[in-house]
Amino acid sequence: MIVDNKLLHVLSGGKPAKPPIWFMRQAGRYLSEYRQLREQAGSFWNLCFTPELAAEVTLQPLRRFDFDAAIIFSDILIIPHALGQHVEFLPNHGPWLEELDFLAIFKIWQDQTYLSKLQSTLQALQIVKQNLHLHQALIGFSGAPWTLATYMLNLRKAHQFESVLSLLTTKPQEVSQLLELLTDVVAIYLIEQLKNGADVVKIFDSWAGVVPIEARDELLLKPLMKIVSQIRETFPKAPIIYFGREISDYYPTIIKNISNLTLAFDQFVEPIQIRDQFQTVIPVQGNLDPALLLQGGDELTRATQNLLDVLGKGSYVFNLGHGILPQTPVNHVQHVIDLVRQT
Image (cartoon, rainbow, N blue to C red):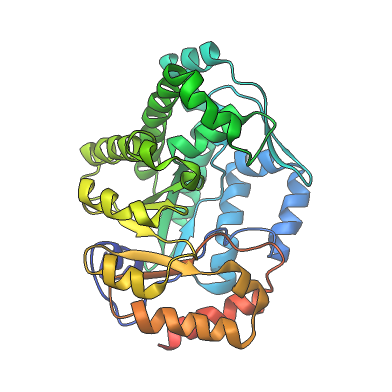
């Protein structure tokens, strides 16, 4: 199976002649078929929580582009939602989360009643799995504990981290307890995704870059180590990808403490650095700039070819440094796929 499946082959250390390719946010607003289905669904959460719709959205980019992997359509904020925190997606604003009720969250965690609210994603995984070709892998995912905590603690100030960082000194016990809770929930959620059809799981630490350097071990590494350890107690060989945005300088510490982990890189890291410092040790994924994918033209071609020239001979998954931007033309996506598959 791994030999037939290019992504799994690379994540196990293989070096195929042509790298596998998939894109973060490959299911989304840049596709007309997604926009149509999103309108029919009526709300983003309805799209996520209706297994048939979530599965259909997951499969749309594979029908159009024949990517080497599907990533289940969901959102990292499904975990706060499952834990009882009200989450809304407001137009031109992004996510809005109500004030966190620590006692209520801990009660739901202890009773494990949150699991019922994750079932729709697990059902969607089962549907997608039945509709994939053998050469296509299925990726499940979750937000990392720190990134989830930034949303859960930040209330109405999305992407403004001063209030969260101040809690590290004013309420360290509450933050520590929340991270412990989230570490357990994320591990269980990813294990359940593997049980329900996911071949690979990915952990998104989108806001890792705001963590003070002296707090990285406690806030980033410690939870990640526990999650990986729990997953491998049940799935010893499960491929796991970690994406820590803007902390590539910390990746050597992660590698030192966690074995058999694939690292995904944002667009701010030079391909030569990825090759020389990391690819000799682990499989790597990344890191085309989504802005170049939006822009197109010769610069996109050169950047794509450079990634292939520098990284393409090793264990490498071609991807973006972040998600596809909604305004991206579909012909730009197809152009990159053609370049990767012509190498």
